[in-house]
Length: 296
Image (cartoon, rainbow, N blue to C red; front, top):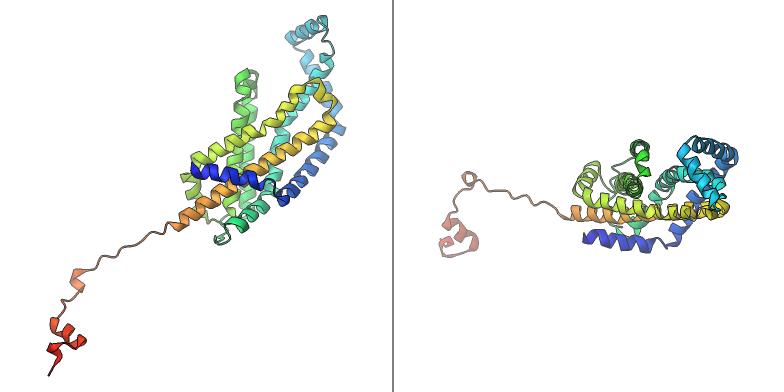
């Protein structure tokens, strides 16, 4: 547990490093361009489709009519756009995580390695191809889990539990692997992931809950929809920084665990075979030492 807290505070300190801040802008730029590009071509169609889907539910229409009676009729025009943004959030989070893993994690692991673990041998147990396949496989499993669990999000407590757990599991899978890919061998990586699975999963889940922080912007409702061009880039940058912090946290933890594991060198004790050891002759010892028995 001490290693977990130590690596946490070190990751917080590294987040304000100029190199980390500079690296965070590349995923931000890519995500903002992609988000506004998709919004330009598909926003109106998506909002119209979601609005028609909402109108097909009699209960929703009854609720909307009741809101109009109490003077909240303006929410009808906001509900569909807000729902589109909420549904797009998992995609934004997923893309931010993958972009951070692709463009930031190798550089940040190298930064941590140079500053704290310069003497740690790099065995390159995970190639780029293996890392990409591992990330894609984990991402597909997370997408399946998200799709299956979406109906449960309508239950108020579960919407605060299931998505962060899924993001946490994915964060643990991706960043723990990438943190050890350069420095650890394949066997060392498997041993650390097995021995520290509990702490690494806890780190991933906590990072998943931190990643849910930008979703608080959605709570502003109509104000968020009106300020979406400003708040969407802000939310994306917060996602990027959260995952950058998570990557640094895993890097500090995993490399420290690797260093400790290598420091424990097994000592092999060889038992002497009594049958192969001949009894020592006192006269021979005295002769070598120049004692009395060596005199003519």
